[in-house]
Length: 146
Image 1: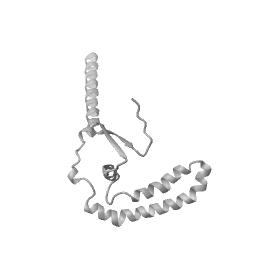
Image 2: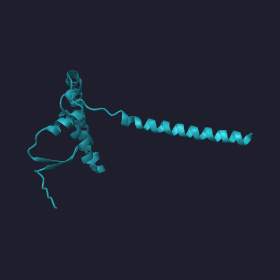
Image 3: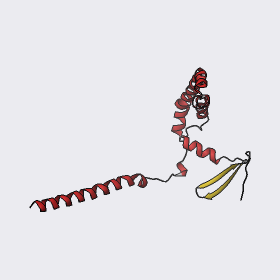
Image 4: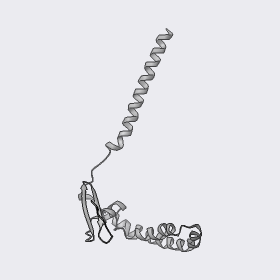
């Protein structure tokens, strides 16, 4: 009787292990199944996001940029001593003021998309394999070797 009980317990344990493994596999596949296509006709800022960005977002960005500039000036002697004035400048001065240049009501990804679509006569775009591409800025010194 104990041999039979041990066999049943081993079968139950194997069955539980298989079910748990399948459950974990199914749970890990959910993000892949959740991918959606972007409807390009509805892409970009809406009226509501533009109004909220105008009334709330841009004024707060301006306050953040001015406060970041003040913090950068105050922290400059300490960042020079610490050896990271470039990092302080990037985080406290450049990034807040760059955020002010984002299109009205746009998310960061929407703004990047619109800026990438702008025509730039100094950039040569070579499509390698959709969606991969190579961008060459012709203002830079470019050497192509075979």
